[in-house]
Length: 231
Image 1 (cartoon, rainbow, N blue to C red):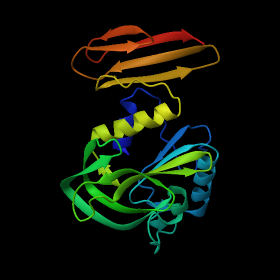
Image 2: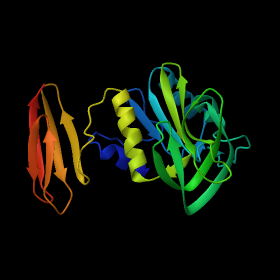
Image 3: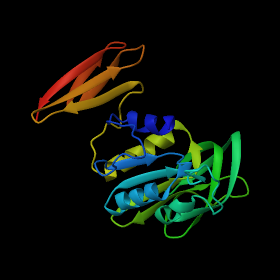
């Protein structure tokens, strides 16, 4: 959860942490990391959300148990398999050992902790493993489901991987963001029917320059600035 939160936060977008029972329809992107426990109601609501055009991200260790804490016996991600368009045929808990994945543009990222080895049935490969006995096997997939898409991330990567995925998903959904935002600077907005307030936080011990709406803001350490814009 922290890695995904950081990936989107580093791009200056608003983020809500919501309960699984909340409505998904008002969100363009929903990230459901390690959805370990599931039930038929949640599966149905996520499928409806994606089918209607939403973008969903799921990760390793999803669909392991039901709401009664009973271990499900099918192949992971179990009830989410149709939505994800893939199944886990084997997994390798590598711990602190570092390996690599290769994306479709041949860029490489370091991974650790966990490796789901995926079998795709409908989904397309987004990244594959570069090491171990499962070299060349899918690690991350993207599945078209109705009008939307579901990404399954079967491993745990470095910070830059999450920022890259977040950047791609935000761009695909036409959501304004800040790819060049300095590390440690946070942007969030609040609005009503007439005005948009943009809060810019410098959470670092050094001065930072930030470009917002074609204006360069100079923030001293730990300074916050608020910009007001009419709708």
